[in-house]
Length: 117
Image (cartoon, rainbow, N blue to C red):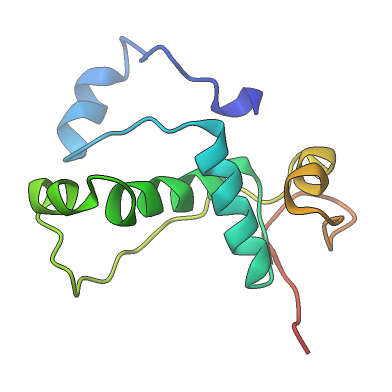
């Protein structure tokens, strides 16, 4: 998941970015892959960035210490959370090894829903 290997904040971007968000987090690759699997389970083929967004939300809001995290962020138990998925399957081999099946798109350039008929 080299695209998610962003361990250093951009000094040029940080002033604007830090004012625009209430919180930031870092997650392990395993959380991103859990997110990919969860999305695939509902028929949405998505890449590591989209999986990371869902994985981070799940880790923060339902994982260990989630009660204190929700309280700190002001997220009530009955809150609805919008998770932005910003990447389709860009690495079909990684998708297949993570999800256990090939992606349902031949191009790997966007989010693709699959039918569960």
